[in-house]
Length: 53
Image (tube, rainbow, N blue to C red; front, side):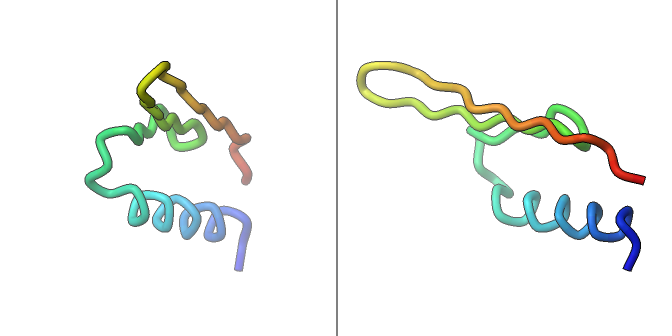
C-alpha cells in the first residue's frame, strides 16, 4: 500500500470518528482542529501534519 493510500485511509478514519461532532473541524486535508469547552475556559487543540506523497 502506498503512502498516499495510507493517508486516505487515515483521513477516512478521522472523518468517521468525528462525524457529526461540531467541535471537530477539518481545516485542510492535513490540518484539524478540536474545540474543548469546559466550565472555566475554552481550549482549541490543532494538529497539522505534512502532506505525504
